[in-house]
Image (cartoon, rainbow, N blue to C red):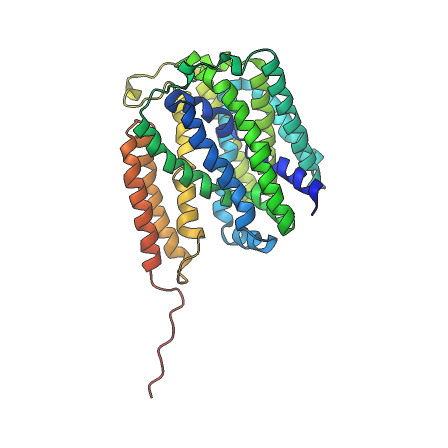
Length: 395
């Protein structure tokens, strides 16, 4: 596909497929913890990192090679992403919200079954609905009118913000290369149209979505210290509608990207993922309360937030570590199996460190994570070549 219309349609598809429960909910936590600058540090690498993929992958063939070589990692990324959406929609919106999200997902899947282009028109509709909700919420005085200086003070220090910034850059700059919906868009467009689609999708469509989230983040972040059931009650209907409609679309496009090749193992894994996400989300909805004694070591305010952050940290450690260590080309050709061993060790060590840094609020623990990643990358570069040169014949 090529041309301005294709760029706009695929831009809407990309922007809406990237509007996860991260873009719709994480700004609330960021404004609460870091103030306005927390949202800025989140938004800039998120928008620019995702948009850059359309320029880094210069053509369809490059994307195809990545997906073929790293198929398992891309599938795991998609499965975890679907479970993440299912979890938070269940935890905040409850059974009714999950039902609506499921209906949206089913509608998108069925409507676009024979023609991928229909998914882009569905994305255009979803984007229009979100903008309509934004305008309606603003007209009723439920967004920016609630913002005041106190909403942007944050509860953490400037040092904490400085340490969060490289973590945000690491995750948002690298995670897009595992997203099958991004690869789908890149493979469906020409070089020029792909660049335009990624630019429009993230610098216009997705940016509009997270500006929307900033509009209610200040109000919700300070309205309650308990991010869970209390927050769900504060989310007025317009935001619940966006959460379930956008969540349903996001799940739908990831489901389609996972099942395009008809892999039965992927379909079974997807079923298990949906079931687990549903059970965890509804379970948290039913039992959520003030943190018990076992959570006093954290600075989170509810079980909902704890599990949310545990999901989120996968996108800040495990997935970007795979891209850094296994996908970015090395100076010499190195065995992929050897890379996977180094990656497994780095991911196993970095994830608990990230939990200490961003759940137990020991931000300085970010530093050993980056030291670990740099060391792992250097180690991969020093590994023996997978295709050593044959010895020179004796004279």
